[in-house]
Length: 224
Image (cartoon, rainbow, N blue to C red; front, side, top):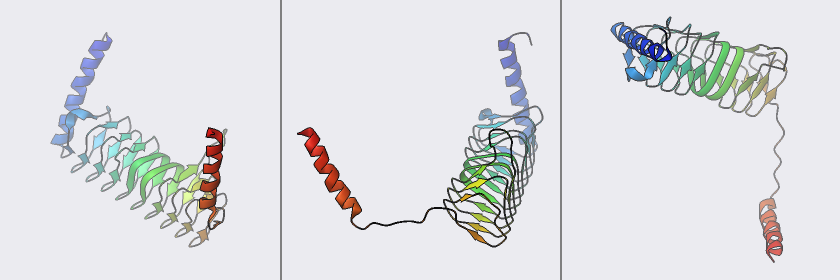
């Protein structure tokens, strides 16, 4: 290969061969031409790969896993029966357990997600361990970096992390613990405990009507 054009031709030939080998090995590629493999990608039997999936180096996908559309995966091991995507990103150092789910707009980096755990949407999980059957709500992030060092987050088996929560590492959420939605968790939560770390709601009856009336009058004066 001496030119960029020749490199592109070589890449096309490699991808054609890799796609054929994956399908001959028992995998289903819904749209083979839109799936891109690396030189060392390993795909098991009865794996389903939807369109527009990219496999970077160091990826293995065990039997009967599903990789849904527009997912980008590198340096990750995916166990049988797991479901990844659509629109998921798995970065190096990720180990996804059997039957686990990593859904749309979820990024996972240097983390172990145990069997049956669910991170279904809109989350970042980095430098972490998510225990078996734990549930990570939408909008949850592990705050793993302080500008100098990375820190670990431990989420126990069966734990439930409510939506829009921030887990400030290093921190441990115990087995079976609950984190209330919208919490910023800065210290460990004991097993089976409930942690709520957010401001208390304050209601002011009639405030909205008064605000609209006051604002409308102010706007009218400015126009005048």
